Length: 270
Ligand SMILES: Nc1ncnc2c1ncn2[C@@H]1O[C@H](COP(=O)(O)OP(=O)(O)OP(=O)(O)O)[C@@H](O)[C@H]1O
Image 1 (cartoon, rainbow, N blue to C red):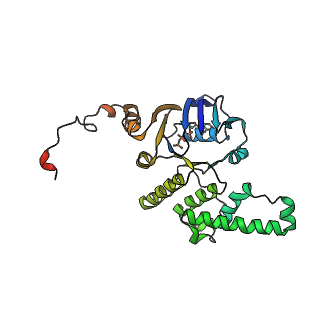
Image 2: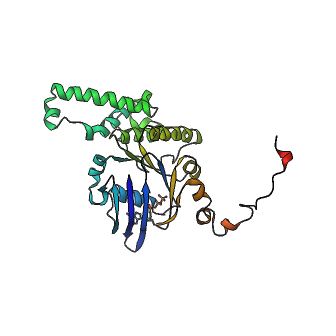
Image 3: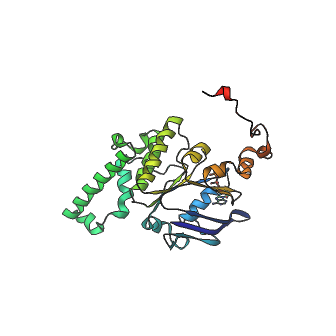
């Protein structure tokens, strides 16, 4: 579905991405992790055409994303949320989602001015669909409350509803669990899995290692802008380079963290 090859991005003297290649398969939850400053957001921004890479390509369903403008990305079927919530604070939850659907509505400027029958019918459909999406992410009961008055967890779910309003085939979530308490994270996980089960591929940038390892089908780990590890969670989690990057040098060999396998004592089992 998405094939990135040799992506590199530099900010002045800083090489934020260096020769990054990976593939996201249709229908999976793909995790992007790495320590602070590893280049995750930069990679996200390259994929969504906010940054132009110096080299490399990123094909999404055969379309070269790096040559598009940011506003053309959603039309290709990719939607994203942001690390720092970007909602229209003074609009209601419902209105925030209706704005997200703008891309898919047909009534042009003329329709908006004359408010003809077709426009009114489309508005009604847009509103009904927005409410459906709010219910889908579990916050239908706050549809008419202004976004700024919602709890943090609900604001994050509203962001997801707004992204879904563009009817994406790939949904990219930038640290959706940031600032959430453990029970909100459990609800979020169920929502992301539901989205995947409903046929939308998910790209997840996340600091919460447990969340990533438990729910992602495959994972890409970045460090200093380069691919440190790439594969299934179990393999990535046991990759000594990943352990070292997260727990510090020498940790991969630390016998306290990884005691040698000892025979099980049968008496401890039922
Ligand atoms: N617009 C920019 N101008 C200059 N340097 C930047 C810019 N954006 C990112 N960087 C630098 O590029 C490197 C990678 O940053 P990036 O935000 O992509 O990392 P990250 O993995 O997303 O980190 P975090 O987990 O803290 O969000 C960092 O050293 C950062 O300071």
